[in-house]
Length: 278
Image (cartoon, rainbow, N blue to C red; front, side, top):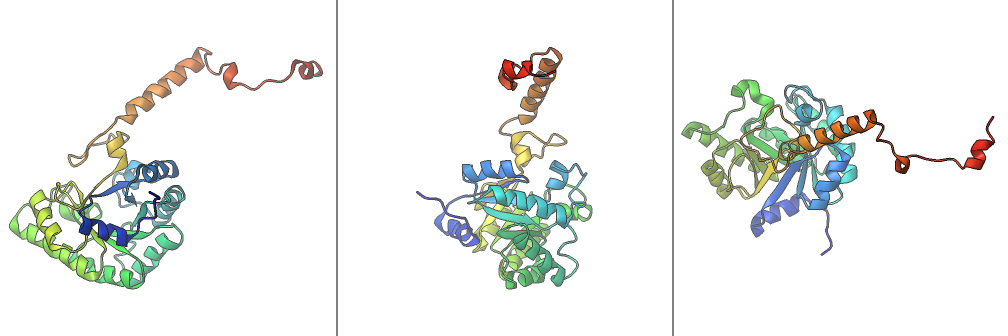
């Protein structure tokens, strides 16, 4: 069956059809190619690149220009997956005008198909304005890393009735504002079950249990490429860090022992031509 480009409409149709949605982050061309080839539905160019790629302590320092550059690289590699640009801190919470402008940059300069932003009822008018401008939006509630200082760190959200009700209300507000889907991070599974049942649009879970319409993870976590910490919500499918270190050590040893390069890795000149040299 010939593949076609995934759109926000397709993502919404998957909920109606009972098909689970897959989301992974990617920040570069080669990773995007492989995720696209594997059939990932949504590739998120997450602001998590601030930590996993650029080495910052948190997501706050990453800029729009950095996000656009990485999104453009992913867009060159992924031809079928929906490409989702993650709006960084300060790019949408200053004014609706700024939000529309920066979301437009993701589409126009970055080649994204949609954008994601953090917040619930407090950003519903911003979401509405971006959608009105013709740009699809995914909401993000629960644990929102850009608001980490206000949340008191990386903590599960919605653990009591009042906090859980706020998550439900936030999800409904985002849907009403026009979001095509809602990402829930670090939320108890039975709360996400209730949200998923209440919403007409799909829910994507990141550490939110099995009841969501889809699941999302950070690619560096599942590949074992980010060892500063491993969140409970993630699963490591392979440890590429160990494999890479082994390859680096082998390279160092072979160079030191003059085992690399061999003739097979070298270029040669014809002996007759060599004899012509003074």
